[in-house]
Image (cartoon, rainbow, N blue to C red):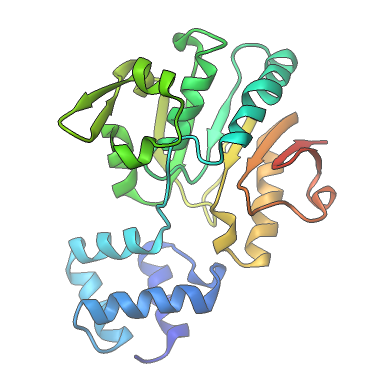
Length: 258
C-alpha cells in the first residue's frame, strides 16, 4: 500500500481529519479495506483519486466516521437523564437550558433529547445544537426519516406522538421536533468548541480515539460547560480520574463540571 504516515499527512491537508488521533490498527484496517474496494493499489493512487473525485472523497469521510446510532440507546441511562439529570439542570439553569449533542450522527440522539425535554417544557423553549464531522449523516439527520430498527428501543409513546409511518417500515419525525435542533458540521479534534453549555451529550464516540485525543477533548468539553454543567457519555466510556479534567462523577455515565 505504501507509507501510512505520509498518507495520514496528505489526508489531513485535504480534509483536516487527523488520523493520528484514531486508534491506528483499527483505522488502518478500515482504510485499507476501502482502498481495496475501490480497486486501487496504493495510498498515493488513492489520494490522487480523492483529489479528482468529490464523490469518492465523500464516501471516504463517511466510511471513516462511525455512524452506528439509534434512538434511546441504553434505555436505563435515558431514564436517569429524565428522572434525575434534567430536573437537576432545570433547577440549576432554568427552563432555557443549552444542550450540545456532539458527534450526533444521523440525529437519533438530539431528537431523543427534544422528545424527553418536551415532557417538561414547551417545544418552542427547546433548542439543541447537534454537530458531526460527516456532512452526509447531517443531511440524513435533517431529513429525519428512519427505519424501524433505529426506533426499536424508543418508548412507544414517543413513536406515536412524534412520528408518522411512511410506507411499510419507515418513520418520518415531525417537523415540530426537527425545528428544535440546529445541525452543524464540526470536527471534535480541530474546531473550536461552543461555550456556555449546560449539558454536553457525546456517546459511543470517544472509544475510537487515542488516549491523548480523549484527554484533549475532555478538557475542551469542560471548558465548554457552565459551572455545574453535565457531560453525558456512552456506556463503555466511563472517565477514569474524571477529576483530572475538572469533573465529578455524578451518576454512572454522567459527570458534573466542578
